[in-house]
View 1 (cartoon, rainbow, N blue to C red):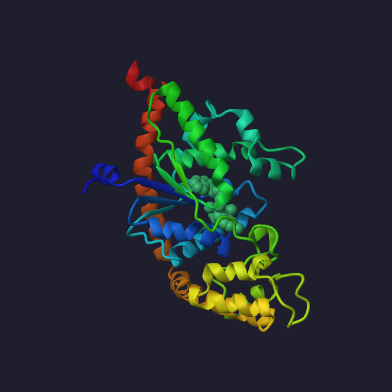
View 2: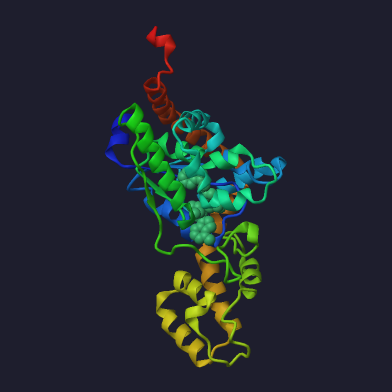
Length: 337
Ligand code: AMP
Ligand code: TRP
């Protein structure tokens, strides 16, 4: 099948993840698990978004290592380069040019209303314009593949709304070209961190890593907050307010859930034992990921090869879209005069 017919045969998906170095359970259940599931039905482009990551405070010296680690984690959970295109955002500079073209239609007012911008801008005395423009680059990431669907966690809903607005505004001015992509948000919603309060997030230190070994999983789960009213081992518990129980519902074999719930309510199983079961479930779920990651870590050339081939493939599509967008915006004096 040639590229054009392949592109029209299936709908297109794009998603992105920052190279934070660690993939945690929230990323996995909230986003990456969908990446894996969507590979057969859609033509998928998955990007490690290093140009977004440089807005953070992480040390630039280890960005390359974090990028490679993220690629390993993505491949370890089952994203298969034979069935999708995995690449690093900065390898496809066309994203940045399209972001500039979109800057000409993206409303400042809308950008200022983004929750993530409002939160993060508080940390700065002088706010970098890149923080405000972050969602414009995200829109370019998506629309340069003319993606129809974007699997993301619940926290990205607003950025997707803005992407649709940008597509709509651009189309209104330059003619119908970009689709209005749909956010595909898993039912699990936002996964709470092990503190039982905020969303699971690396910067809050409330995560369990998907590549943790048995000891690492237990180290994280052992500290997880349960029902605060349960002080003694045999106090009756309230599964409906317990985050460990919520996690059980997401990862533990469904046939075990009724017993876990009943014994918690009756106070016949203590929180530590209950956490042991959760840790076992996670270790079992993560085992194949760890095995694949181990292989990839010892074969970095394989990972580089995947990313290089991915970038070539992504660029072919990105160039085509950018050429059309430039032309419609009048950036074509060489061919026009
Ligand atoms: P990030 O690490 O912030 O780049 O997030 C990568 C992906 O994981 C995005 O699609 C997020 O929406 C998703 N994600 C991150 N944290 C969570 C969470 N606690 N619950 C659900 N999804 C999440
Ligand atoms: N903003 C996203 C996050 O923080 C990452 C991202 C960048 C993204 N570009 C994207 C997600 C394009 C989906 C599609 O998680």
